[in-house]
Image (cartoon, rainbow, N blue to C red; front, side, top):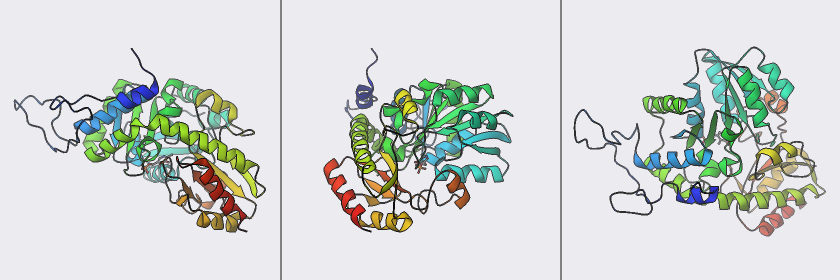
Length: 382
Ligand SMILES: *Cc1c(COP(=O)(O)O)cnc(C)c1O
Protein backbone atom coordinates (compact mmCIF):
# COMPACT_ATOMS: atom_id res chain seq x y z
CA UNK A 1 0.00 0.00 0.00
CA UNK A 2 1.40 3.42 -0.86
CA UNK A 3 0.85 5.87 1.93
CA UNK A 4 0.34 9.61 1.74
CA UNK A 5 3.20 12.10 1.99
CA UNK A 6 2.93 12.97 5.71
CA UNK A 7 2.82 9.28 6.65
CA UNK A 8 5.87 8.51 4.53
CA UNK A 9 7.79 11.51 5.94
CA UNK A 10 7.30 10.14 9.46
CA UNK A 11 7.77 6.43 8.78
CA UNK A 12 10.50 6.21 6.11
CA UNK A 13 13.38 4.22 7.62
CA UNK A 14 11.65 3.67 10.97
CA UNK A 15 12.11 0.28 12.70
CA UNK A 16 15.13 -0.40 10.50
CA UNK A 17 17.58 -1.31 13.28
CA UNK A 18 18.27 -5.05 13.27
CA UNK A 19 20.68 -4.91 16.23
CA UNK A 20 18.46 -3.69 19.06
CA UNK A 21 15.04 -3.19 17.48
CA UNK A 22 15.40 0.54 18.12
CA UNK A 23 12.44 2.40 16.66
CA UNK A 24 14.68 5.34 15.77
CA UNK A 25 17.86 4.11 14.10
CA UNK A 26 21.05 4.93 16.04
CA UNK A 27 23.64 7.38 14.70
CA UNK A 28 26.26 5.14 13.08
CA UNK A 29 29.62 6.80 13.50
CA UNK A 30 31.94 3.97 12.47
CA UNK A 31 34.33 4.84 9.63
CA UNK A 32 34.72 1.20 8.59
CA UNK A 33 32.75 -2.06 8.61
CA UNK A 34 34.04 -5.55 9.42
CA UNK A 35 34.09 -8.08 6.62
CA UNK A 36 33.38 -11.80 6.96
CA UNK A 37 35.55 -12.46 3.92
CA UNK A 38 38.34 -10.38 2.30
CA UNK A 39 36.80 -10.75 -1.17
CA UNK A 40 33.22 -10.00 -0.13
CA UNK A 41 32.19 -6.58 1.22
CA UNK A 42 29.02 -6.52 3.34
CA UNK A 43 26.22 -3.97 2.98
CA UNK A 44 28.64 -1.31 4.27
CA UNK A 45 32.40 -1.23 3.84
CA UNK A 46 33.85 2.26 4.29
CA UNK A 47 31.88 5.33 5.44
CA UNK A 48 32.94 7.69 2.65
CA UNK A 49 31.27 5.29 0.23
CA UNK A 50 28.17 4.65 2.31
CA UNK A 51 27.09 4.31 5.92
CA UNK A 52 23.77 3.56 7.64
CA UNK A 53 22.74 7.06 8.83
CA UNK A 54 23.30 8.63 5.41
CA UNK A 55 21.75 5.64 3.60
CA UNK A 56 18.60 5.98 5.70
CA UNK A 57 18.22 9.67 4.85
CA UNK A 58 18.91 8.96 1.18
CA UNK A 59 16.22 6.31 0.94
CA UNK A 60 13.72 8.56 2.77
CA UNK A 61 14.44 11.51 0.46
CA UNK A 62 14.32 9.32 -2.67
CA UNK A 63 10.92 8.06 -1.58
CA UNK A 64 9.58 11.57 -0.88
CA UNK A 65 10.88 12.98 -4.19
CA UNK A 66 9.57 9.97 -6.14
CA UNK A 67 13.14 9.26 -7.29
CA UNK A 68 15.00 6.10 -8.32
CA UNK A 69 17.73 7.15 -5.89
CA UNK A 70 19.11 10.08 -3.92
CA UNK A 71 22.65 11.10 -2.94
CA UNK A 72 23.08 13.15 0.24
CA UNK A 73 26.08 15.48 0.24
CA UNK A 74 27.87 17.71 2.76
CA UNK A 75 26.16 20.85 1.42
CA UNK A 76 23.68 22.05 -1.16
CA UNK A 77 26.54 23.44 -3.25
CA UNK A 78 28.27 20.03 -3.21
CA UNK A 79 25.01 18.55 -4.53
CA UNK A 80 24.82 21.10 -7.36
CA UNK A 81 28.50 20.62 -8.27
CA UNK A 82 27.99 16.84 -8.19
CA UNK A 83 25.52 17.14 -11.09
CA UNK A 84 28.25 18.71 -13.27
CA UNK A 85 30.38 15.54 -12.90
CA UNK A 86 27.94 13.62 -15.09
CA UNK A 87 28.23 16.07 -18.01
CA UNK A 88 30.52 15.76 -21.07
CA UNK A 89 33.62 18.01 -21.42
CA UNK A 90 32.71 21.64 -22.22
CA UNK A 91 29.08 20.84 -21.51
CA UNK A 92 26.56 23.46 -22.57
CA UNK A 93 24.64 24.60 -19.52
CA UNK A 94 21.60 26.87 -19.60
CA UNK A 95 20.86 28.24 -16.13
CA UNK A 96 18.11 30.42 -14.67
CA UNK A 97 19.52 33.97 -14.51
CA UNK A 98 17.97 34.57 -11.07
CA UNK A 99 19.26 31.37 -9.47
CA UNK A 100 20.73 31.22 -5.96
CA UNK A 101 23.85 33.46 -5.68
CA UNK A 102 26.10 30.53 -4.71
CA UNK A 103 24.98 28.55 -7.76
CA UNK A 104 25.86 31.50 -9.96
CA UNK A 105 29.30 31.84 -8.34
CA UNK A 106 30.01 28.12 -8.85
CA UNK A 107 28.76 27.99 -12.46
CA UNK A 108 30.69 31.18 -13.34
CA UNK A 109 33.88 29.66 -11.92
CA UNK A 110 33.33 26.34 -13.76
CA UNK A 111 32.72 28.34 -16.96
CA UNK A 112 35.93 30.34 -16.41
CA UNK A 113 37.77 26.97 -16.22
CA UNK A 114 36.03 25.99 -19.48
CA UNK A 115 34.53 23.01 -17.69
CA UNK A 116 31.14 24.22 -18.95
CA UNK A 117 29.87 26.69 -21.57
CA UNK A 118 27.32 28.76 -19.73
CA UNK A 119 24.25 30.72 -20.82
CA UNK A 120 21.95 32.48 -18.37
CA UNK A 121 18.32 32.83 -19.36
CA UNK A 122 15.04 33.99 -17.93
CA UNK A 123 13.52 30.51 -17.57
CA UNK A 124 10.15 31.98 -16.55
CA UNK A 125 9.62 33.12 -20.15
CA UNK A 126 9.24 30.15 -22.57
CA UNK A 127 10.33 32.17 -25.64
CA UNK A 128 13.52 33.40 -23.97
CA UNK A 129 14.21 29.89 -22.69
CA UNK A 130 13.68 28.34 -26.11
CA UNK A 131 16.04 30.91 -27.68
CA UNK A 132 18.73 30.08 -25.10
CA UNK A 133 18.33 26.36 -25.90
CA UNK A 134 18.35 26.86 -29.67
CA UNK A 135 21.85 25.51 -30.24
CA UNK A 136 21.27 22.51 -28.00
CA UNK A 137 22.27 21.98 -24.38
CA UNK A 138 23.51 19.28 -22.02
CA UNK A 139 21.98 20.65 -18.81
CA UNK A 140 19.07 22.98 -18.15
CA UNK A 141 19.18 24.21 -14.55
CA UNK A 142 15.98 25.76 -13.23
CA UNK A 143 15.15 27.17 -9.79
CA UNK A 144 11.49 27.73 -8.95
CA UNK A 145 10.34 29.69 -7.10
CA UNK A 146 13.46 31.77 -7.64
CA UNK A 147 14.99 33.46 -4.69
CA UNK A 148 14.51 36.25 -3.60
CA UNK A 149 11.96 37.48 -6.19
CA UNK A 150 9.89 34.27 -6.16
CA UNK A 151 9.45 34.20 -9.91
CA UNK A 152 7.98 30.95 -11.15
CA UNK A 153 9.08 28.67 -13.98
CA UNK A 154 6.61 26.16 -15.40
CA UNK A 155 8.56 22.95 -14.74
CA UNK A 156 6.56 20.77 -17.14
CA UNK A 157 7.10 23.22 -20.01
CA UNK A 158 10.78 23.83 -19.18
CA UNK A 159 11.38 20.06 -19.01
CA UNK A 160 9.81 19.63 -22.44
CA UNK A 161 11.87 22.45 -23.97
CA UNK A 162 15.04 21.19 -22.27
CA UNK A 163 14.51 17.61 -23.47
CA UNK A 164 13.77 18.81 -27.02
CA UNK A 165 17.18 20.55 -26.96
CA UNK A 166 18.88 17.33 -25.78
CA UNK A 167 19.44 18.50 -22.20
CA UNK A 168 18.86 16.80 -18.89
CA UNK A 169 16.71 19.01 -16.70
CA UNK A 170 17.53 19.78 -13.07
CA UNK A 171 15.34 21.79 -10.70
CA UNK A 172 16.60 23.40 -7.50
CA UNK A 173 13.76 22.45 -5.13
CA UNK A 174 15.32 23.94 -1.96
CA UNK A 175 12.63 26.50 -1.19
CA UNK A 176 9.59 24.23 -1.48
CA UNK A 177 10.89 20.68 -0.84
CA UNK A 178 8.91 17.64 -2.02
CA UNK A 179 6.28 18.51 0.59
CA UNK A 180 5.11 21.34 -1.69
CA UNK A 181 6.50 20.54 -5.18
CA UNK A 182 7.78 17.36 -6.87
CA UNK A 183 9.86 18.27 -9.94
CA UNK A 184 10.40 14.64 -11.02
CA UNK A 185 6.65 14.07 -11.35
CA UNK A 186 6.56 17.17 -13.60
CA UNK A 187 9.15 15.78 -16.02
CA UNK A 188 12.47 16.93 -14.53
CA UNK A 189 15.35 14.42 -14.43
CA UNK A 190 16.93 15.74 -11.25
CA UNK A 191 15.57 17.42 -8.14
CA UNK A 192 18.43 19.01 -6.19
CA UNK A 193 18.11 20.73 -2.81
CA UNK A 194 19.99 22.25 0.03
CA UNK A 195 19.01 20.06 3.01
CA UNK A 196 20.24 22.93 5.21
CA UNK A 197 17.09 24.94 4.59
CA UNK A 198 13.46 23.77 4.64
CA UNK A 199 14.13 20.02 4.46
CA UNK A 200 15.98 19.87 7.78
CA UNK A 201 14.13 22.94 8.97
CA UNK A 202 15.98 23.58 12.23
CA UNK A 203 19.06 25.51 11.04
CA UNK A 204 21.42 23.13 12.82
CA UNK A 205 23.23 21.30 9.99
CA UNK A 206 24.46 21.86 6.43
CA UNK A 207 23.71 19.35 3.68
CA UNK A 208 22.43 18.74 0.17
CA UNK A 209 20.67 16.11 -1.90
CA UNK A 210 20.50 15.10 -5.56
CA UNK A 211 17.46 12.94 -6.39
CA UNK A 212 17.35 11.32 -9.86
CA UNK A 213 14.45 9.84 -11.78
CA UNK A 214 16.84 7.55 -13.63
CA UNK A 215 18.56 4.72 -11.72
CA UNK A 216 21.68 4.70 -13.94
CA UNK A 217 22.22 8.44 -13.50
CA UNK A 218 21.80 8.01 -9.75
CA UNK A 219 24.42 5.22 -9.77
CA UNK A 220 26.89 7.41 -11.68
CA UNK A 221 26.37 10.35 -9.31
CA UNK A 222 26.74 8.09 -6.26
CA UNK A 223 30.00 6.85 -7.82
CA UNK A 224 31.25 10.44 -8.10
CA UNK A 225 30.13 11.28 -4.56
CA UNK A 226 32.30 8.40 -3.31
CA UNK A 227 35.22 9.14 -5.65
CA UNK A 228 35.32 12.82 -4.65
CA UNK A 229 34.28 12.21 -1.03
CA UNK A 230 31.21 14.47 -1.02
CA UNK A 231 28.90 12.54 1.33
CA UNK A 232 27.28 14.03 4.45
CA UNK A 233 28.38 13.01 7.95
CA UNK A 234 26.46 10.55 10.12
CA UNK A 235 25.43 13.21 12.62
CA UNK A 236 24.20 15.67 9.99
CA UNK A 237 22.32 12.85 8.26
CA UNK A 238 20.68 11.90 11.57
CA UNK A 239 19.64 15.51 12.25
CA UNK A 240 18.15 15.91 8.78
CA UNK A 241 16.23 12.63 9.11
CA UNK A 242 14.78 13.89 12.39
CA UNK A 243 13.92 17.22 10.76
CA UNK A 244 12.17 15.40 7.93
CA UNK A 245 9.64 13.85 10.34
CA UNK A 246 7.92 17.21 10.86
CA UNK A 247 8.39 18.58 7.33
CA UNK A 248 4.71 18.34 6.29
CA UNK A 249 3.56 20.07 9.51
CA UNK A 250 6.20 22.79 9.29
CA UNK A 251 5.53 23.39 5.60
CA UNK A 252 1.80 23.78 6.21
CA UNK A 253 2.28 26.22 9.11
CA UNK A 254 4.92 28.27 7.30
CA UNK A 255 2.85 28.55 4.11
CA UNK A 256 -0.22 29.62 6.07
CA UNK A 257 1.66 32.29 8.03
CA UNK A 258 3.62 33.54 5.01
CA UNK A 259 0.44 33.98 2.95
CA UNK A 260 -1.30 35.77 5.83
CA UNK A 261 1.64 38.14 6.36
CA UNK A 262 1.99 38.74 2.62
CA UNK A 263 -1.71 39.65 2.35
CA UNK A 264 -1.51 42.07 5.28
CA UNK A 265 1.76 43.61 4.05
CA UNK A 266 0.29 44.10 0.55
CA UNK A 267 -2.30 46.42 2.13
CA UNK A 268 0.28 48.36 4.19
CA UNK A 269 0.87 51.96 3.01
CA UNK A 270 4.70 51.81 3.11
CA UNK A 271 4.99 48.65 0.95
CA UNK A 272 5.55 49.41 -2.73
CA UNK A 273 5.92 45.82 -3.92
CA UNK A 274 5.54 42.38 -2.44
CA UNK A 275 6.24 38.97 -3.96
CA UNK A 276 4.52 35.79 -2.78
CA UNK A 277 3.42 33.00 -5.15
CA UNK A 278 -0.18 32.59 -4.00
CA UNK A 279 -0.84 36.30 -3.46
CA UNK A 280 -3.54 37.88 -5.62
CA UNK A 281 -1.87 39.66 -8.55
CA UNK A 282 1.34 37.58 -8.46
CA UNK A 283 2.31 36.95 -12.11
CA UNK A 284 3.07 33.28 -11.47
CA UNK A 285 -0.11 32.52 -9.56
CA UNK A 286 -1.45 30.19 -12.25
CA UNK A 287 1.80 28.20 -12.40
CA UNK A 288 1.90 28.07 -8.60
CA UNK A 289 -1.62 26.65 -8.48
CA UNK A 290 -0.68 24.00 -11.06
CA UNK A 291 2.63 22.76 -9.65
CA UNK A 292 2.85 23.78 -5.98
CA UNK A 293 0.69 22.77 -3.03
CA UNK A 294 1.76 25.82 -1.01
CA UNK A 295 3.57 29.13 -1.49
CA UNK A 296 6.56 28.24 0.71
CA UNK A 297 8.27 30.10 3.54
CA UNK A 298 9.77 33.01 1.55
CA UNK A 299 8.39 36.41 0.68
CA UNK A 300 10.16 39.54 -0.49
CA UNK A 301 9.19 43.18 -0.35
CA UNK A 302 10.27 46.70 -1.16
CA UNK A 303 9.44 49.66 1.07
CA UNK A 304 8.66 53.20 -0.09
CA UNK A 305 11.70 54.66 1.72
CA UNK A 306 14.16 52.62 -0.40
CA UNK A 307 17.42 51.13 0.87
CA UNK A 308 17.70 53.39 3.93
CA UNK A 309 14.26 52.42 5.21
CA UNK A 310 14.90 48.75 4.37
CA UNK A 311 18.04 48.78 6.53
CA UNK A 312 16.15 50.47 9.39
CA UNK A 313 13.43 47.85 9.07
CA UNK A 314 15.68 44.79 9.22
CA UNK A 315 17.66 46.26 12.13
CA UNK A 316 14.53 47.01 14.14
CA UNK A 317 12.87 43.58 13.81
CA UNK A 318 12.94 41.50 16.99
CA UNK A 319 11.34 38.25 15.80
CA UNK A 320 13.07 38.04 12.41
CA UNK A 321 16.77 37.36 12.98
CA UNK A 322 19.10 39.09 10.52
CA UNK A 323 20.76 36.02 9.00
CA UNK A 324 21.17 34.46 5.57
CA UNK A 325 19.34 31.21 5.43
CA UNK A 326 15.73 30.18 4.91
CA UNK A 327 13.12 27.58 5.72
CA UNK A 328 13.90 27.04 9.42
CA UNK A 329 11.34 27.04 12.25
CA UNK A 330 12.67 30.48 13.30
CA UNK A 331 11.86 33.54 11.18
CA UNK A 332 14.78 35.24 9.44
CA UNK A 333 15.23 38.43 7.47
CA UNK A 334 17.93 39.43 5.01
CA UNK A 335 18.88 42.07 2.45
CA UNK A 336 19.81 39.89 -0.56
CA UNK A 337 21.91 42.59 -2.33
CA UNK A 338 24.48 42.69 0.49
CA UNK A 339 23.97 39.18 1.90
CA UNK A 340 22.77 36.09 -0.05
CA UNK A 341 23.31 37.64 -3.50
CA UNK A 342 26.43 39.75 -2.79
CA UNK A 343 28.55 37.50 -5.04
CA UNK A 344 26.50 38.62 -8.08
CA UNK A 345 27.58 41.72 -10.01
CA UNK A 346 25.39 44.82 -9.65
CA UNK A 347 24.32 44.40 -13.31
CA UNK A 348 23.37 40.75 -12.81
CA UNK A 349 21.36 41.70 -9.72
CA UNK A 350 19.55 44.45 -11.63
CA UNK A 351 18.75 41.98 -14.42
CA UNK A 352 17.36 39.50 -11.88
CA UNK A 353 15.23 42.24 -10.31
CA UNK A 354 17.12 42.36 -7.00
CA UNK A 355 16.97 46.01 -5.91
CA UNK A 356 19.43 47.22 -3.25
CA UNK A 357 16.52 47.82 -0.86
CA UNK A 358 14.80 44.46 -1.42
CA UNK A 359 13.99 42.71 1.88
CA UNK A 360 13.54 38.93 2.05
CA UNK A 361 11.63 37.30 4.87
CA UNK A 362 11.79 33.61 5.71
CA UNK A 363 8.72 32.89 7.78
CA UNK A 364 9.01 30.38 10.64
CA UNK A 365 6.44 28.78 12.91
CA UNK A 366 6.09 31.54 15.54
CA UNK A 367 2.62 32.93 16.23
CA UNK A 368 1.46 34.88 13.18
CA UNK A 369 0.13 37.78 15.31
CA UNK A 370 3.50 38.25 17.03
CA UNK A 371 5.27 38.29 13.66
CA UNK A 372 2.74 40.79 12.32
CA UNK A 373 3.13 43.12 15.32
CA UNK A 374 6.90 43.01 14.87
CA UNK A 375 6.64 43.90 11.17
CA UNK A 376 4.10 46.65 11.83
CA UNK A 377 6.37 48.26 14.43
CA UNK A 378 9.35 48.02 12.07
CA UNK A 379 7.45 49.62 9.21
CA UNK A 380 6.48 52.64 11.34
CA UNK A 381 10.13 53.75 11.63
CA UNK A 382 10.93 56.27 8.87
C1 LIG B 1 21.21 27.64 0.30
C2 LIG B 1 20.87 27.28 -1.08
C3 LIG B 1 21.73 26.50 -1.86
C4 LIG B 1 23.07 26.02 -1.34
O1 LIG B 1 22.94 25.17 -0.24
P1 LIG B 1 24.04 25.07 0.93
O2 LIG B 1 23.50 23.99 1.79
O3 LIG B 1 24.12 26.40 1.58
O4 LIG B 1 25.33 24.70 0.27
C5 LIG B 1 21.33 26.19 -3.14
N1 LIG B 1 20.17 26.63 -3.65
C6 LIG B 1 19.31 27.39 -2.93
C7 LIG B 1 18.03 27.84 -3.54
C8 LIG B 1 19.64 27.74 -1.63
O5 LIG B 1 18.80 28.52 -0.93
